[in-house]
Length: 173
Image (cartoon, rainbow, N blue to C red; front, side):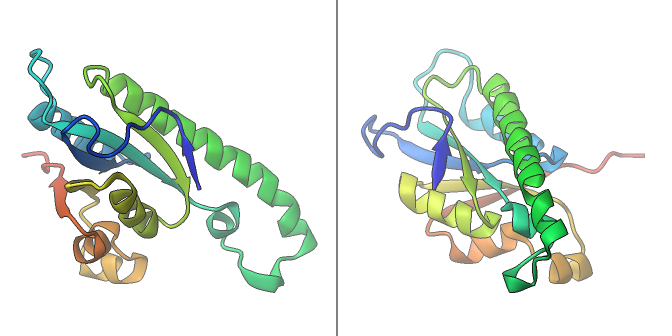
């Protein structure tokens, strides 16, 4: 269920296409948002071609602690409310920073949705009838990607729209 931190206009209501940008606490996702704003949402007063929906996927407390199923012990279960509160604060920090970065976008929508990022983003694309999904690349190698899973790889295969994967350039030595 989405906890909306802004008001969402109905898809297509403004006659513009919608772009969903995935955002977490990583510098890679902030870079992707800033890149998107520079290239698609100029501050020069022109009519914006896209509506912007910024989506943060908040993991469940149980998944963040690594607990699942009936094996949760009493001590571990006592920790879950504290983890949940911390995850909620983290998501609100992400959304607050996104609001600052998106100041020039007149009707941006900001959402925190609980769940696995891969599913949350693909569902956000459907919910907003998005034409494009923008995700940042963490730059994992093949082994890390295989072990951790790649949100951008999953979305590029499962989202029903164009998926743009924005890579932060490596510093030149």
